[in-house]
Length: 452
Image 1: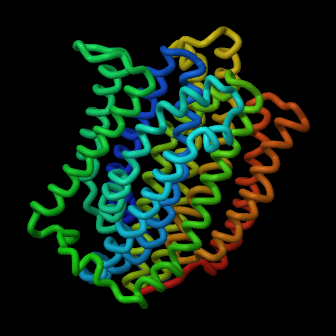
Image 2: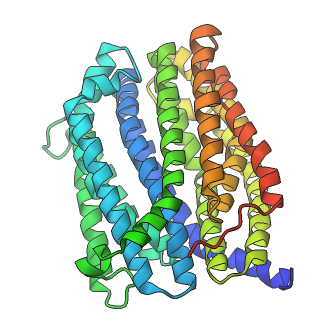
């Protein structure tokens, strides 16, 4: 390595803070919404929490699919930014908007046509299905608005202009929380709509968020994303195919992971409504605490992509080393925090005593599972994918998801009749296998590619 390592570490730290903190805040804000949703709906009962958890698995699959598209194309955005090619960036955004909206429309149509069939993938309880249907048939109309907002917001990370998108997202979440309170419980003269109120609040907030994002981009005359229809959608066939060559493996990776995660949630539902409600609460708490990893992962991907856009492979590799060190430190902190709050979380919900006990045990197991989960995340999302090593990531993810995680979940529930915490631990074998393959891949530098 011919560069100054001290200066490189300083650059990494500065950019992690510049990009990572707004991303962390953005994720925390979103996770706080999920937490408040779960907390408010939890006052209605276990069935309602389980129902909204099942319904939100559909949005989860869509959002992760869009994340896959945007992560794959962001490799181009980051490298175009490093090369100062604004026209190239705008065409990538056009591709993201076109495909993101198309995916959102497809998911919305599926939910409107087959709500019961989709929800039955996650639970067989008729009460949960009926309640979930009431929620999802309203919330699904928010998918398209979220798709547009996410395309602009995610690409803003690649050009390191994330403050305004973060503020917009925070404002939208605040609107959502206030509307949740008013519409779920019927405050200020409004009707008490229960789970329907939560869905309506989500829809209104997502519309407002998209409008604010578009106003921000198009009122700022110097914003790199400010482009007309021809600039956005005038991309060539060759650019589209090159972008898809990079993005499709990521989409396959993220989609397969999301589907497996959603179906794993369905496996937990076979244990019972209590296990399903606990799994939903633990998922929200875990994601809230793990937001710092999402910030480090996204920031690392953008930093590595920018370095590769400048042709500096050695520095990109060194940034990968820095990201691993930062992740290990964060794992220790987050695991201890999760263990520390495990006895306090049940006090926030109106669950029966046996469900509270299950919730405490599951949170404690989840604290131990942070290590393999987040190490695998930083390798796959923050490092290898940023280097354009998407085919390797796709093959490894499909194997770990479809051949390990999903079968192990159902074997644990239906064959071994394990408890919820034990099944969650069994599923984590998939992440251990990911790490075993990613570590040698990283040190051999086979993941480093320049795609533009």
